[in-house]
Image 1 (cartoon, rainbow, N blue to C red):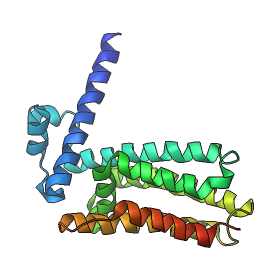
Image 2: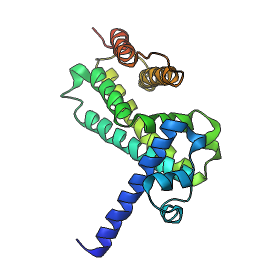
Image 3: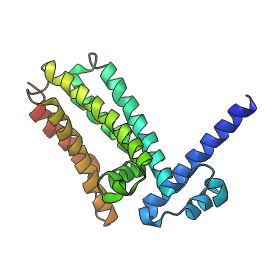
Image 4: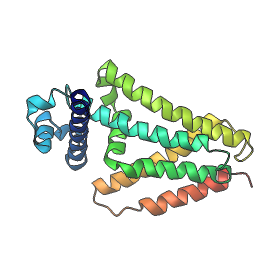
Amino acid sequence: MGIVERRKREKDLRREIAMDAAMAIYNEEGYHAITMEKIAERCEISRASLYLYFKNKDEILINAIVDHTEYFTDILQDLYENREQLRDNLLQELWARFIDFYEKEPETFNASLYFQNSEMILNLPENLRDNIDESGSKVVSLQHKIIEYGVKAGMFIDCNPMTLSEVIWTSFLGIVQLERSKQVLSRKGHYESTRDLALEVLSRGIVKK
């Protein structure tokens, strides 16, 4: 391995460590508790070194969100490319990828919702807003294509595929947000049972018999 490649790998690793640290603080203490100093301390590097990779905490968080969203894009793309083989279980397969996306990095998933459902995104620099919008748009486009295929192939009810896609996705988001609220308030959660029941209800209403 050459010097340039080794340095790039080291840089990528340090960036990843910084993003993981920021997300851990977010999960434990919330957005407003995050500081560059806390992130640097958790990474065991100097704050000056951290600034070599990121300008501020928002840049770290948005990069983590975009990386996580790219993973979601990849697994949705895989579903779309294999739609013919999976057509009999298309909704279940889509729902399973929602679960995979959430459970892979719950704290990053929740941070994404925080930015998208508050005025926070409006306060971001334009380049960070563009990054998060571009990655989100790819996900939305793939979800619509998957549902459109299901509608046109006669597996799903006749309706506007875009609207149906949004109904399915927001159903999952609502469950996650509800269970997150319970967790914050130290109440007993029912994530798995609620998630599974939602899929059953959606299947009965969406999948053509």
